[in-house]
Image 1 (cartoon, rainbow, N blue to C red):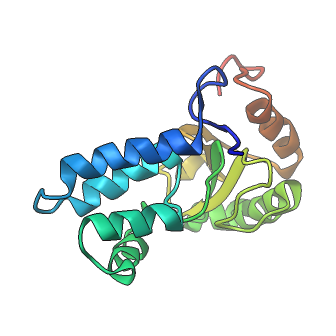
Image 2 (cartoon, rainbow, N blue to C red):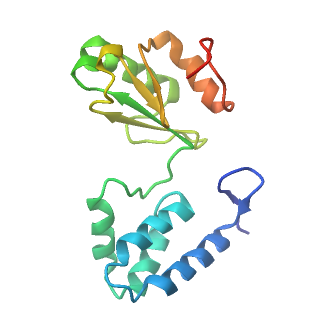
Length: 178
């Protein structure tokens, strides 16, 4: 029996069978389009949230390519993910200003709080941890981004509360913004 996978809001339950049906529709539209592989991979990732091996094999067959050729394209582009990503992406800036002002310690604290390493996703699929090199807020270092929200002058003591805000839904901080 297939378990539902939530896409978007909790009210929209999509089964794995529905996802593969969507993939087959995408493939029927793009399999003969020159240069169609990348758009198909992008749309497939949007449907599944990542690129599962079974979907990549189906794509390879549809484009009459080897699995290794399709997997090679996926591994070349950093945009593509072959493992599920979290609902929220936490990025720690490790650019020069953030690094010297405690970015490395913030990263270590996040690893500890989340129980994952860089590039990994929490078991509850809430958070994926990544690093970046500069977010353009050097004067406000150290900086992290959660999804598209920039959080500045972060201290390790703030992280648990900040992560809880994302874990429990949107919330405004004391200053009235994120």
